[in-house]
Length: 126
Image (cartoon, rainbow, N blue to C red; front, side):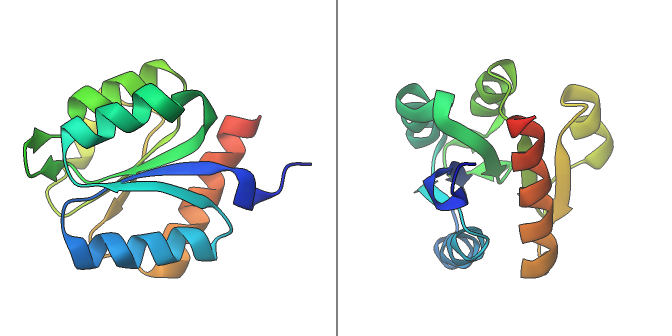
């Protein structure tokens, strides 16, 4: 069985303090963080390099250079489970576009977010 610390999770969040808090939560859940990426451009570069290894992706919707959807579309097409963590997310629209996505409103309790992330990673492993 793979050690979760060897499993990468993409973190896309443009607010520094939230990104640092999320990184701590993800690492506390036993995963390795790729990022945080503050822009769509940074997220796309990380996807280009690491997409096949991502167990999941934690995504904010609104970023400094636009919405996360171009990156989310690539991740979704690659079979990477998506966990949207955003204060600007329209749950219904996200679930229509990404039916298997997990949506956690911002802010979410770290324990709830970690549990949701573990569920995403388990879906990817299955």
